[in-house]
Image (cartoon, rainbow, N blue to C red; front, side, top):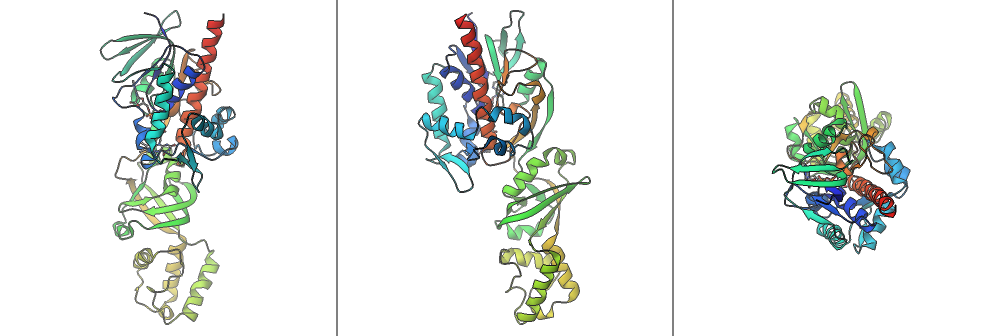
Length: 415
Ligand SMILES: Cc1cc2nc3c(=O)[nH]c(=O)nc-3n(C[C@H](O)[C@H](O)[C@H](O)COP(=O)(O)OP(=O)(O)OC[C@H]3O[C@@H](n4cnc5c(N)ncnc54)[C@H](O)[C@@H]3O)c2cc1C
């Protein structure tokens, strides 16, 4: 049996980018082995079916800042293939893209299927073979520096180079470990938070722009600012997802029990006190329900907060007592919620953890432990915040690995 030049384990975004790049750069015998019946399933469901495939963050240093884990190493990779390169790569292959106001990049058609079709078409026209329902169970390295691959039915494939693009699937970590790699404990990242404050569900659907929030746990504090969404179980929105990513490991260790502090007002204590005193003075006849000290607070949320402050919503501003004013200031500046768990749905977007980045060359994505073995995508201990950064890492690592395999291939064939 003639060996393959490259076997790609995993038919996701990273696997396809690796296969297409290698094929376009001269590598001849390539096969993608995918355990399920579906190719690039996560691409399909991503971004609500629209696929936020990268972010218009063109400067490599700035791009790398969006990865709570792996950012420094990634800079080596982004200096070779960053967000602008990804943008051009897809457009050159016929996929029209658009940049939204918040810098997220989507297909102009708003359909993730177009991203899938672009990658699939380019793989097939370049002769990449695809085998679905092939679960790679075992990989062995032979004394001749080849890899033998076995599935559950003991079907055998032999290859000169292999890439693990298995995402967050435990089998990928097991395979990497069997080839000499250490695995950083995988934990979920990018999730919402559930609070015990059941009455908050009265505000479900309320979203507020540019809010400072803080997570306190185990004597540590994590802060961020961004848009917040109240759900019927607790908190979501970009700022929560971002903070869940930054504190992913610590939250996992504490079983997601922490305190969330929301700062509803940007004002300092002194200025907020003055503002409330002016309300009492100038708008004393109006009741608390009808005049909110912070216009950004929707009425539903303001009523919920008044209830939490234990202040009668029908009270007139002029009747607000000094101790009630202090309670109001405290809650508007430091509103605390007990977080009991992650959100109730399995909405984790990425896995934090995976193959240790210290054991991989980030210019070629080749293993430093086992020559001929490569990695791309989520299988590595790299994860980004929301905004297209996780796919960006898949494209970059996939492209670098594809290029590196083609370099090896061309060196051998030109000898
Ligand atoms: C709901 C959702 C929405 C998301 N939205 C976005 C977004 O808009 N933008 C963004 O940047 N990121 C988004 N992400 C994250 C992004 O989808 C992932 O970072 C990305 O898909 C990882 O790609 P991958 O190719 O590394 O792994 P995967 O997409 O997980 O692909 C790995 C493949 O390997 C296969 N496999 C695993 N083990 C084996 C084995 N032993 N043998 C054979 N095959 C195997 C799996 O079946 C799978 O098909 C989203 C994630 C989710 C879950």
